[in-house]
Length: 407
Image (cartoon, rainbow, N blue to C red):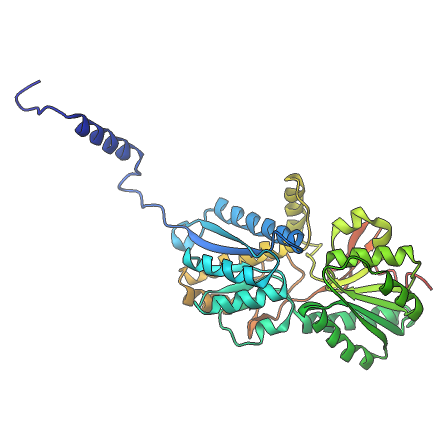
């Protein structure tokens, strides 16, 4: 040791080692520091009665975030990665609000999802207190976008759009078959979603020459629908239109099958099972030929086949919620890119001005008016030979409708 070197204490050696390790690990001074991630809240009900749909939605969001990050992140923010802050709405609005509050405290730039109308209503209201942008995935109640909340945007169609499309498609399909259907029984879940839809159908269907034989409300969850099936057999309507969640639809279809309730067709609207491959696979006879007017992916878009393969290869199930939530997250990423910022106010303006058209749904370009995407529309699907096909409109169809199913 020379006179110019000072003895090094144990503490000093440790400090020196740590400093040297940090210097080696640190990026070059010529290289810009990695930008902070953009936190995005993903809200879905992954426990409780709606857990299956919530998982579909979460899968779509996760795939979109993975693809955005793999492609280099948000270019306008120097390649900032998207960081998911997930919240389980636990199938009820109170839990949804609690998760929004947590996401707010964690500093998310925006929230996507919600699925059920009651959750979306409560969660968007909670987010509005913080001017926190919220893109609703499903949530069909039109109250969601009728409250003047500047932070709230619904990417998919709601009650009014779906009901109008359902009636127009039914009229065209019925006319093409020689008008075999004249009487209708409406079966709906007794919550916000089903009651609102039934009210619209009761008003609009008679304008097109259909007679409403009866409207039957059922609770969610339901354990036994034998009395409903018996009533339908007594009414003998040409069409049964169920607007119910997955469990109740499966129960109703199987009970109708067991009790030999055989209408000319089952024409569902925004149904929880009729456009769900799990129902088709588990109960193929009960599901066969059921029609539905619902959200669905664009069967002509090859990206959907690619995405579906990734989902199946991962051992997960595929449903419309997956490409829908994938598209919602991609829309948000596009808005962040155009805004060049994760600032909430700038994001709200950017989403409102969106013309995003690289989505996976059978929609036109995105155009928000009063919070509703005017480019969104449902399609008519039908279970044919254990596969869900799009039968209307023809621009997106991959099969012809079988109607009536029975003479």
